[in-house]
Structure formats: structure tokens, C-alpha cells
Image (cartoon, rainbow, N blue to C red):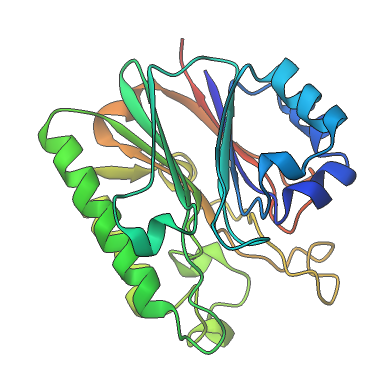
Length: 257
């Protein structure tokens, strides 16, 4: 099974840039999109038909605020059940979470909040991390396995961004943000990419400014954190850094048959 996460930074714009052709090339079974910034009724007929023909099982969770945030999960493999949100209105109105249940695990498609340049939303972001971890702890206590994927809006370690020292006081690399990734790892999760490739430098986001992507001045913000019990089922995780269409690139988790 192939599960792909991709922050598309505006679905309509990404579709205009050839997103669907890129998606076909990825040959993924489940596509988890973040920051869609659109409702399904805002897509043109051709785009809607292409999506529904290729992915028979589509779930949308747009934000209440127009042109902002939102997630979508497109699947070729039918989930047993789908839920939306964390159960807290302050997060759920922004369309940040879709949960799809498959045999053996629950898949969370997540768009974590951005702390903003003035750091004004950092408390909101950290509260989101805390509420989600509470839910995951309960699922682990029940013996369930979890896959968390999406844009975490945090680079965990210095290896995960090109200029760690220069960004030590910027949201996305604040000590209190990075600590939450540590908490998840201490609560039974594995960062699949870093577990498989402890020394590899790969990024998943580049600013549009100053030819950052061409020069590979980036951050690793898009993750798969999975329950430790699931790790033996992992075949690989692939960063598709050459796939364009957004300031993020897609990342695919490959699970063994």
C-alpha cells in the first residue's frame, strides 16, 4: 500500500500547474492533501471528474474561512470508516484533520497550524499538538495503530533544515515546537524517514524566494510518524523532491503487502 502526503498550498492553483499528472505518476493508493484552500464545489467539472474517476473514495474537510487551510483525502482503497476533526471547535473549523480507518491502522491526514512570523499562533499550534497526542495516547491504549502524516510545520532537528542557527528563533524551529516531536516519539511513535535514513539530508519545503528550491535551501516539514508496532510493515518512505506544483513536495510511505 502506498500512502502519499502533500501540502499543495492551494488546490486550484496546483491543479492548474499539473497536479493531477503528478499524482498519476506517484501511483499512490491514498493521497492526503493539506492546505487545499478550497471547497469541492469550487473546482471545475473536468477536475472533479478526474479526481472521482481515479480516486473513487474522496473526503473533503475545507475550512469555514474561504481560501484558507483545509484537508482532503483521496483514496483508491476504500476506508472502513472516516472521521473529521479532533472534537475541538477551535481546530475543527479550520479543517485540519481527516481520519481514515483501514484494517490494522488509523490514518490521520493533518495540517498542523503555523505559528506565524510574529509567533502569535504558537500557543494555538502547541495546543493542537497536545490535543492530538491525547487522542493518539487513547488509541494506543486501546491497542490500535496510528499513522500520522501531513505538514507538521516543524523541523525536528538541525539536519532537517538548511540554516538551523539562523532560524533558531523562527516558528517551525523553536525549541518548544521541536520538543513536541520528541514527545510523540516518546509516546510510541517512529519518524519513519529518520529511522530509515538517520544521516540523509532531504527537504520537503522551500520558500518561493531567492531560488531556494533550485539551491536546495529547504526544511523537512512533512512527516510520517507511525506507531512503533507498524514499523515492521514499512518497506520505504520516498521524498519526491523533483515533483513541482507547490512549495512543498509529496512524500510517500510504502507499506509491505
